[in-house]
Image (cartoon, rainbow, N blue to C red):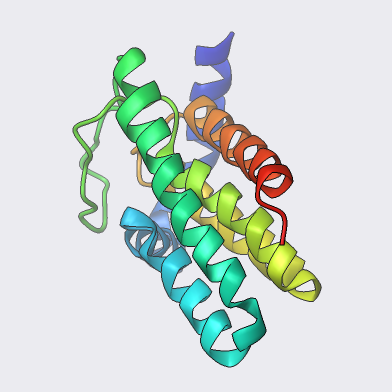
Length: 170
């Protein structure tokens, strides 16, 4: 059943893979989120613009590191799921990780960042959720992950953020 859903979602992305603006958006989002660079940059900008939110930036930086170790250094080693097959229709090259496909680290860090950014700047919640969704979808679009990898990563990142907010309230 999971394979059926993964295949169906992959097919739903196929028309977008023929559109240059979609390719550019998803490939740029995927690259920007490598190593959580986008999330750290946004967090730094928030801290510079609003010094009272520096604690939020510190918490996010620490938690992104912990999340990365847990997902990329832990869970991915336990699950040896193959990444989707690469086809010749790729418009841009994206770094292909050597780790397991499950769960998506990009989706996990995106969800974590969205929850914690919402805690820091609640009025921008639609922006944070949209950015996380674009990065997460980019992993399917670019054939780096199956849809179920992305769903699991987003769920893990959200859960991690909710737990972290309870353990490290600001």
